[in-house]
Figure 1: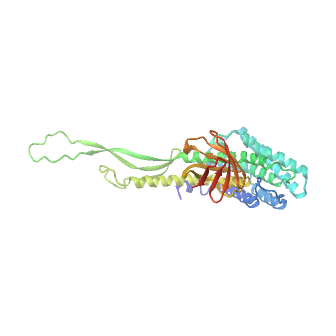
Figure 2: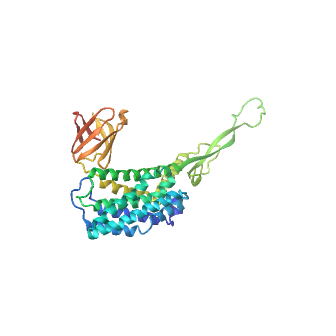
Figure 3: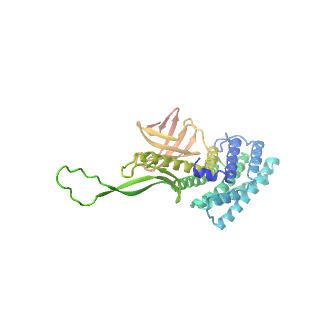
Length: 382
């Protein structure tokens, strides 16, 4: 276990990790095979009610307190106005939880309407925050998960006769997904950048051994020296704090350099750095937030006959990279120095993509690994 992991192993952050893990598990078990985009079946009220009851038990640990816990452990400062705003937003989500439970129990349509309004208000706060600070994102991340989870259960509880069109729900869900994804990625990149590997070295003055002169007197000019750079080792540092040092000398003569241990020490420092990043992200519960994100994404996913995600080859040459987010997709064309294209999954075997420097084309998905385009070209998955 690294020094960082050891320092937090007894921390109350384990409470945060457990709560987020439970949220992910409850969402996945209740709605694991559900898709807002494809489902044509009425929701199972009893199953959703049971999941919400379990979620409510998990959320008895107030998410504002979890934000405070993160703040305490990471020594961050969050704006008081936004803190108060989150309390109001989570209060709206609490109202939505109570009202959707009432609807699922006795079919009270007025309760459903209130749940819809309050769950929207709960999520809207986070969408309008415009977060950019790493500290703010850490603090508000649990709150977004709570508000978003309640919003999802309200949507899943709506009878098909009054449910909004799948495309509207996908757009609504998409904003939540994008916000959660951006927060997670910003936190991950910030943590990664905070951990560095640095070299520790010094200059050592060593005598120069002259060749022996066999004949004639040797002039007395004093003993000459040379400066030798000695790499003492490499250290893993986080935000100015040295976490681990790896000796690159191991008793070697400072005048006989390199010692031969430099590569080994550098590799060890890099490995410690990677472990340190992993430990800190685990401490913050990021892997569990990523599970929540995946469960949200699954709810607006369209199951296609081919997994579109990944690299594709055009004319036998790998280049385009497709990324799917619910019914939406993007195509990275940078391999051809072309702008990114965007499109939509129409159904399980059809897509449409707009290439901004060309035109819009439809694609027919042909298992196991081919897209046939309307311009008679074809891509093959690598």
